[in-house]
Image (cartoon, rainbow, N blue to C red; front, top):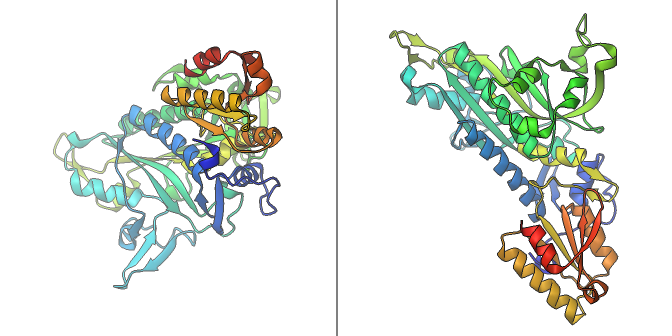
Length: 436
């Protein structure tokens, strides 16, 4: 994509309404624009990042055996009355009536709807186990939406729901999702700490939150220092029942409110760490809470009706965009992990009025694009400093700088955004490295 034809409304100064780093940088980098409190337009650059995260989440859900469907954003109040949650959920639920005076709502979550779908279409234990998921926009009417996409009212969420015949099967599904989450966050370049958590309004008796460690996190965590010894490679290679999964499920990690209730902390003081974290995922096992309340049964192996054991598993896809920025940035802007970056290469033509520079940059752009490398090509008639600032701000992992002095020596400059390291390479060598 040529930047001269793109829509990238970057800002030089931090917007006054932004309080945290991710909100400031998403506005400055031209990723989002607010339309009303907690509701944003995703501009082209932000949408590319959002779609990359969505792709990784989808791939790992599929790998775990989950089946994708798509449920509507608008739900009937009657479904929620069946489960008993309609009146109990609270003012975060947006409730309204259609032209026929029927009560409906903008869904904040989908336990009721997926239970009804399964109840009406599955009859036998042979239909189990199943895990369904979708990636859908949701709405929760936060009393004080703030921090950009970190606590908005409208957000993109991955929800998965498992149905099993018995608790042992349900635990296997829970573990499969636990592993999928470890792999997902590792692919996003993040070590996410699994934190034992209360189940809240979802219900149940087993729950983990996944937190990205970041100094600006909204939650205070206490955890065993052993978490810090785990590598991204270990997480990416996790499998159900493996040693790494057992370690993480048993490791001590709690939010500060829960930690304060513990009479005797099992972690020695010199091994107990205190950091802030950003919640980016939450998984629950809640048994037959919804299936029993909504009359969902299947015929068991002995012919008796059984209420399926259920679990639910959420990842905040849009929230992850902000979370990754909070954990990966510097004073110049965003530093995107490779798989999340909107473009892999930022190509800078230092002198668009120089015929040799223009020809070399154009040729490099065409060859990279032909090789399937996503490139953002800064071909604007701007000074070099402005081009460097833009590329650093938007966080593209690799920058390639084409200038007249370099071309005289037969080289271009390649810069690593994360480390700042620069290297001069021939155009052929640069192409080989970037297309490897």
